[in-house]
Length: 164
Image (cartoon, helix red, strand yellow):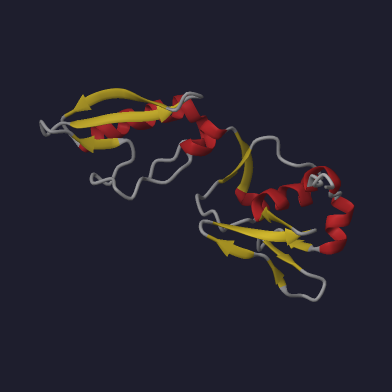
C-alpha cells in the first residue's frame, strides 16, 4: 500500500498560487473559474487543495508568507470565518485561547467572572501550558472582578487578551 503524501510538505506556494487566487482584503480564495473556493464547516472555512481539505486561515498564511504557520493562527477579531490576512496572526495555543470570546454560559456578562454561592463575584483565568484554572480573587462587584481578571489576562496573554 502506498504511503500517503503529506500535503504540507508537497504543496509549494508557487503551485498554490497557480491553483487558487487569494483576495487578502476579502479573506477569500477563488478558483481559476472565478468561483469562490471552500466551504464552511462548523466554526471554520476550509478549501480543498490536491484532495486535502485545509483550513482557510492556515492556507491564507501559507499563500501570503510562503511558509506554513508553526503554531496556531489566531483570528484577531474573534470571527473564525474572517480570513483577511490583516485579521490573522501566529499565536501559541495559550495566546489563541486568551483571545476567545466570552463563554455562552457566562451569566455575569463579563469574561472571567462568575457569581458564587455566597453572592460574591469570583474572578478566575485559565492560562498557561497546563490549562489549569487559576483563582484570582473574590469581589463585591462584578466590575471589580472583571478588572482583576483583565489585569491577569494582560499579564498572561499580552496583546491577545480579550475583554469580552
